[in-house]
Image 1 (tube, helix red, strand yellow):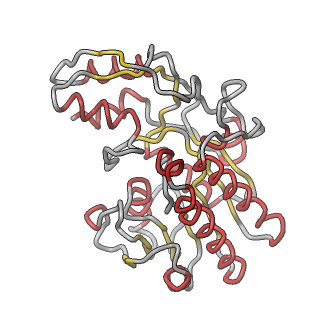
Image 2 (cartoon, helix red, strand yellow):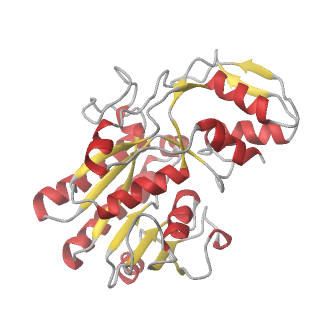
Length: 305
C-alpha cells in the first residue's frame, strides 16, 4: 500500500514513459490500474513497471486520447514539449504539443467527469520581481514554452470555474532525479553530472550566482499525490523546496560528491538567463499539506552513486 495517493482507481499518466511521468507510474501501479499514453519520442518502455498498460500513441491524436481516457478516474497530464529552445525555434510545433492536447484532456474530463492534474511550470513567471515567488506573482513568460504553460495553467483553473471539473495545476520549479536524460531540457544538474562522470570540468555560465530551486522528482510525485486527493481543487500551486541554491554552490556540491574531483570553470553567461528563482510554498503547504522531503545534497548523492 502506498502511503499517499489514489487507491483502487483507474489512472492515466500522459507522457508516463518519460522522466517525471514514469516516477508517477511507479508510485501508483501497486494500488491502481495504471494506463500510460506516450509516443516514446523521449520516453522509454524500460522506464515502466510491467503492470502498467502502455498505449503507444500521441496526445495530439483525439482518437488516442479518447481511447486512453475511457473509464478513467484521474489523469496526470505530463506529456509536453518541454524545451524552451525548441519552443523558440519552432513555436507552432510547441503550441500544438502543449496547448491543444491539454484543452482536449480538459474537454474529455468535462464529458467523462474525471480529475485532471496538469504539469505547469515556474517558467510562467519570467524574470521575477521578487523571491520567493508566490502564486500571485505577475506572470510575464519570456519564451513560447513559458507562455504555453501559462495558458494551460489558466485553462486548468478556468475549467474548474466554468464546468466544475476537479482540476489542479502544479507549477514545477527545477526538477531533477533518476532517469532524467541529458538533452536540451536536462537541466544543469544532468549536465554537471555527465561532466563529472566523464572526468571533465564543470562549466558554470557567468559568475554562477544565479539561483534555482532544485526539487527532487520524489517530491514532485508526492505533490501530485496530494493533488489527486485534495478537496482544494481549481487552484495552481508552486512545487519546489522553498530554498535557493546558486549554480556555483551546486557545482561545488557535485565536485565534492564526485569521484573524479573535477575543476570548476566559468564560461560566458547565457543571454536571457533568469538571475533568481525560489518557490514560495505557503499555498501548497496550507491547502494540500505538502512539505518537501529530499534535501539537495542527499538527492545529488543518490544520483552520483
